[in-house]
Length: 173
Image (cartoon, rainbow, N blue to C red; front, top):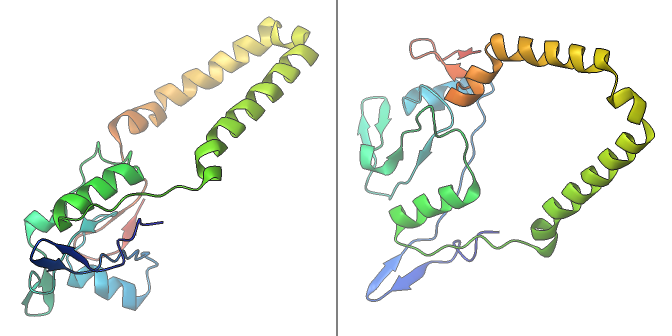
């Protein structure tokens, strides 16, 4: 929930507009490609804040001022809703809060306790298997191959899974 961001706000003498969120999925069809090309999106995800008069049309392109864009770097892919709402509040001058349900608050603890209980049950049931040197050898081999294959490098450096080619607009993996 958005904490009443959908209502226009009055801050002092200034009345601000409601805040809306949009999510556009790049599917490769012509309509979506046109939107991505028109706004010059060369990678995903894109975050920007606009006001009605802040957009500038240059021929077939619509330009969003740099100060209204969140240009994501390679380290920004570990996003969470708190970071995004903080940026939106900074740009909009609003104080929109994220309202979580009780289940959204307790669910991580329930999942963690359930996983811990299952793990303890498995360790207790298969104790001999967990102390078998062959299991540890093959587990080490798998971890080694994951690390040297670039999987860990990609995770550490935030390499995106997919991007958009700047010239053709095609998705690249």
